[in-house]
Image 1 (tube, each protein chain N blue to C red):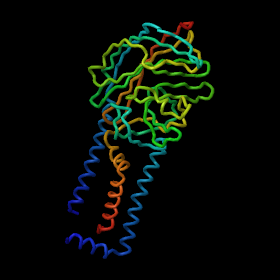
Image 2 (image 1 turned 120 degrees about the vertical axis):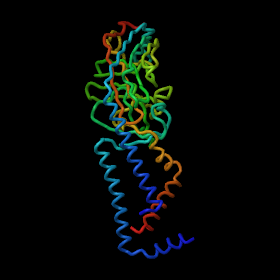
Image 3 (image 1 turned 60 degrees about the vertical axis):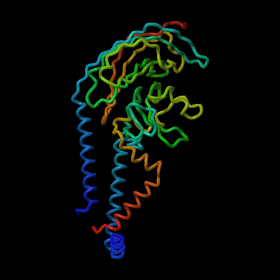
Image 4 (image 1 turned 180 degrees about the vertical axis):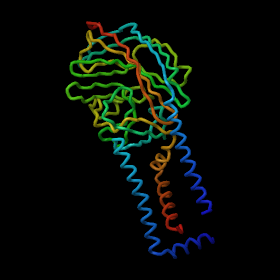
Length: 180
Length: 167
C-alpha cells in the first residue's frame, strides 16, 4: 500500500523539464533502433534483414522460432540456396530451398522452383494461380546465418498481442516513474 | 541503483551479451576446419525418356551415389543437407539446374554412405532440348550449424549424357 502512495507522489511531483528530458531520451532510443534497422537493410540489400521462421516446413534444420539473417547480393540464384520470398497476394514471407534453376541466356533472368525440406512436394501449390516459377523480384534475400530460439519473442508478441500491450504499458510506466 | 529491478536488468543484459559473443565465437570456429570430401555418382540406368504433352522433356534415371563427407562435420554442425543436381546448358538457357535427389545427414557416422536410388524429383526440362545433351552431376552440400554462418560447397562430376532418342 505504501508503494502505491509513493508512486502517486512521484507522479504528482514530476517537473516539466524532467518530463521533457525523459521524453527526448525515449525518442533517442527509438530513433537509434530505427537507424540500426535501416542501416542493416542497406548493408544486407534486403527489405527485411532478419526474419523469424514461422512454420515447420524446413525441419529439422530450421525450427519454428529460429531467426534467419538474410543477405541479397547481385550473385545469381543457384540451386540449394535457402531463399525467403513473398507470393503476390500473401503477406507472410516463406523460407524454402531452391531446387530448380533455369537462367536465360539473353536477359540473365532466372526462373526458380522452391521446396521446403520437410515438405513432400514442391511449392507450386503455394505459388499464385498459374505461376510455375519464381523470379528474382519475388525473392527478398538468401539466408546466410541463423540463431536458434531467439524468434519466439516475436512469435509470442504477434500471436498474443495482449502481451505486447502489457510490455509497452509496463515500460511506459517505468519511464514515467523513474527518478533519473 | 541497487534495487531488484536494476539488478535484474543488469544481469539480463550481461548474460545476453555474453551469449551473443559465445555464438559469434562458435560460428568463427567453423573456419578452422579444412574439409576433404569425396563423391562418386554412376548412372546405372535410364528408365525412360519421353516428351510430355506440354512439350517438355522428362527423364527418369537410377543412380548409384557414394560419398565420404565426414570431414565436413564440426562440433558446431547440426546437420548436412546434400543434394544431387543435374546441370546443363540449352539454346535458350545459359544454365539449368535440376535437383534429382536430396538427403539430410544428421551426424558424422552417417556421412560416409552408398545409395542406389531413382531420382526423387522429376527431371523435367524447360523445353525439349535433352536428346543427346551432355550434362554434369554435382553433389552439393549445405552445412547447417547449431548457430551462426551457413557454408555451402559442391563437387562437379562431368561426362554424363542423355540418349540420342526417346525411349
